[in-house]
Image 1 (tube, helix red, strand yellow):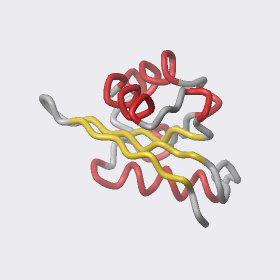
Image 2 (cartoon, one colour):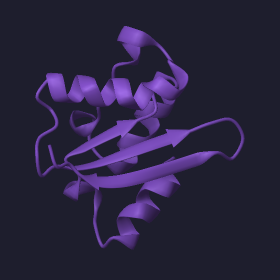
Image 3 (spheres, one colour):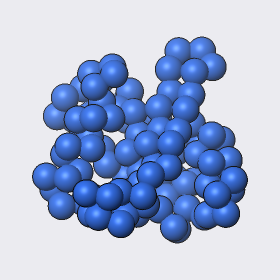
Image 4 (cartoon, rainbow, N blue to C red):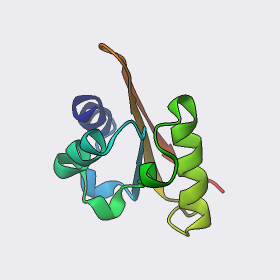
Length: 99
């Protein structure tokens, strides 16, 4: 996940410090802690795996909702969504939050 996140930032001429929030797939704490340690500080990472566990396809939408309700995601923020799966499945998207 780290590689795809850094490549996405570089392709857009951005650095990790430009991100306001990283919302990763909530697969497990080890994966969540690994990416921010080299991409952004944990303060910029939405983590709710302790509340819901790995809800598979629902982790990013749940984490996004929690970020909004906790006041961590605001209009104009630069947010990255990133996910990993079994094997070589990985993806990330970069959004300018508009709500």
